[in-house]
Image (cartoon, rainbow, N blue to C red; front, side):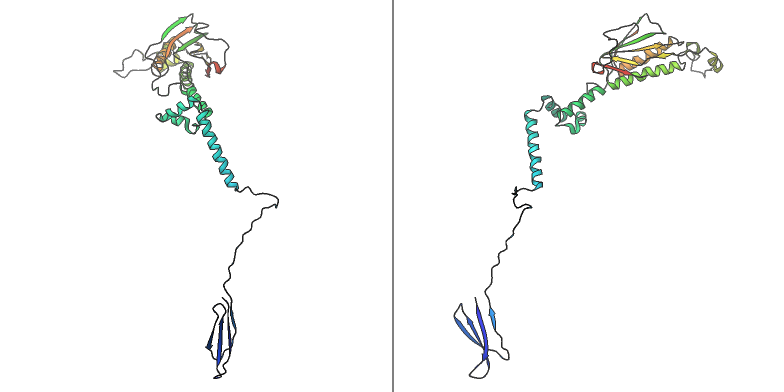
Length: 298
């Protein structure tokens, strides 16, 4: 709409007048106005259009229509779909069995942890667990209810092997336990513990306060071990070389008493052989861990 308003002096009475013309309505209005003369032009409303332009760094480059973050998310989704496809089509059957077993086995679930979904890592963790603690996950008592056999084959207390046959191959934990027992036995023998000439309290009654003659204990002839080798293991066999020195056979009784409880509670032993050069299927010189060789350093 466009309107023009003009002012002038009226001819009839000498006052000002206002002429209002509305070109869109074709009307003309006369309005009286005092002391002021002005000319006003009203313009119709204008419509504005906002145009936003964007340009790339290079005029010749074409936009991909995606952002860097969008491309990263797309790649993550594609990798996830690929892993899911491989898990369903190329996933080993044994890995699926382990995953299903984790639902009901808290120890196995804790063992696998974040390796679930990665068959190679799952395999390594299970192998490490078996190597350290044995194959039975739920075994609470690892000993044997059967007593082991004891035999002697030309046993020379100054230069002989003692052989041990177990019910199965020992885990690393079993090797440490058995080795610690033999090591303790040797340390006691080295310190003269197995001296039958000084057993003052063995046949004494504890009903009354017994007397111990320290001078007699000090003057007896020393009795101690001389040497012992590291303990070797091949599959279910183990052996240790000993030189009992001046220790009495009483040391053998102490060892057998100790191994009796060890076998019934922790590590099942089938037999113990004192003496002999080669027992069972022992292969001399075989020290490859892949074939079941282990050792405990005394």
